[in-house]
Image 1 (cartoon, helix red, strand yellow):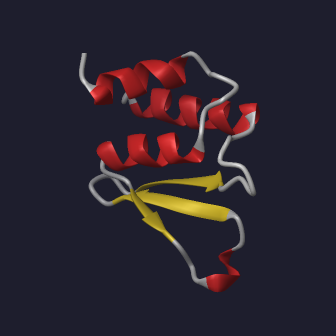
Image 2 (image 1 turned 90 degrees about the vertical axis):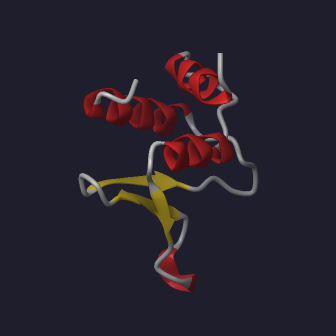
Length: 85
């Protein structure tokens, strides 16, 4: 099983220790690009995929990298609805 397949399987488990770094890596492999509005963008980060113009906003956790369970669930549902998982 490739790292990409393992990453897709991991998010399906909705782990409590899922990190923003993991989410960013998975979205990147699915063709999404992280977009910052600048210094005033706060902790919301937009990920955009040009081929189908899909957008998801994620909360970048701080000071820790661990995402909240609700954010992981939102990301999982988004990817399931796209047919990526």
